[in-house]
Image (spheres, rainbow, N blue to C red):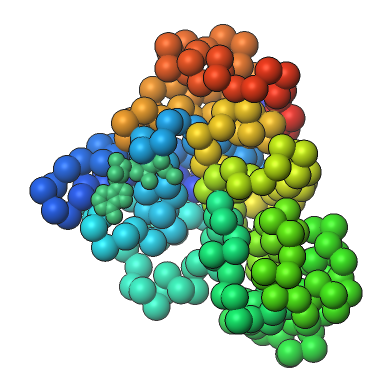
Length: 271
Ligand SMILES: Nc1ncnc2c1ncn2[C@@H]1O[C@H](COP(=O)(O)OP(=O)(O)O)[C@@H](O)[C@H]1O
Ligand SMILES: [Mg+2]
């Protein structure tokens, strides 16, 4: 196995501390994460353990009630947590692509899928309208959506949940991000559609790095190379997916595995 060099690391989170503004309650005391290029890391834990806040912290999208009070976030060797809102707008959608649980509420309902993709591609790349439209159609096709006008010119509510999530992955990847952040990307979908979407995400994260945040350890195990288990804002266990599935060290991890639907715990990750 070759040694890990600094340039292999896409995302490096050091000592991330998140506190509630009111009352100063510590939500995440000190979190360290590293994700290599081509790797998908799964952040799993029960509801309320701080997964979404961690994800939003990495994307510079903390809600007004929550503050990052210590730590640093380094993406592709550059510190990003101290950037201005204007710089963040260039990073999000550009270097960081994001997928959320509910694509219906994340897409602007009055814009067509195509126009949302075109707008993002033109904001981050130097493309003409026609070039951006061609790219949007290519991306939708690569997500196994019809590249036809039926999909490009459809409004978000006209697609099925699974189709919308495919379009959301397309939007997240259209500018070749260094990091793909996915918060509960399949939680709202039917089990069979979940598997298709997870397989698609796995194939698409090759030059970039992925962080998948979910309460569902089976969904994480299906695509993640490594898992980090979080309880009340702290990492209690981490390791290669195979190791965690076969020899979990912590009681809480064992509970998560026991609660996963029978037969779903297979490791489809890259290692
Ligand atoms: N805007 C906020 N202000 C204060 N506390 C918050 C806010 N958002 C979330 N929290 C608290 O932070 C903790 C972690 O929330 P979250 O990251 O959403 O958990 P998860 O995604 O793991 O279910 C919860 O206890 C929640 O109550
Ligand atoms: Mg959450």
